[in-house]
Image (cartoon, rainbow, N blue to C red; front, side, top):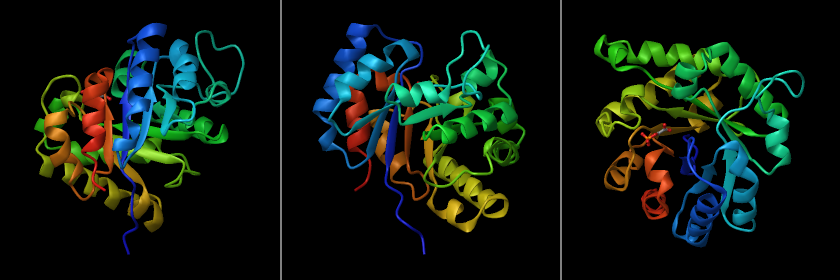
Length: 252
Ligand code: PGA
């Protein structure tokens, strides 16, 4: 029996914002969060997390981070441990975003270690996977995604401590998206892979988000797909009205 997967809408603010703008954006989202049936999360840059956590206190919106290191402490200049994120009020952390795979050379095994660190700290890891345009054109989408999921999922992952975000690299920030049927088909293929490499429980109950140019005008159709359980929103998450409209499009 398929269990219910509560919709999840997360905003990835990337490297944007100031203390003032982040406080204002978070407050607007928190004030209107009850319009959504989904779990809501925002992920500001590290220096803004504390201020955003204060602005969201007592609301239905959680705060998360965009990356973490795999170790709990030590000589890792410029890095932030998952334990530090938990300490400052984070409940989730995004790991393996394609921009970090590209810019910081993050590999599947480092991403698996980050996810394991998140779990050790009591955080939910949002593991990102996605194919490039060349990989899609070569008909390799499902193989690439299966490889990333297999390589990034730590052994202690469960449907409660882990969320997967399918983000086609070519759709991020481009205004292009796969058709809703194409996106859903990749989610189905991820579930099929999890049946083999993890368990039937994880395969059926883990939430799989779609990310890449999700906007108010395409969110409803994407979120209505049976295997799309929410969205990881970049550009549109920087505007409270757009983020809330996407959140309101999540099915009850
Ligand atoms: P986008 O970004 O919504 O701006 O395409 C999504 C993401 O990178 O998570």
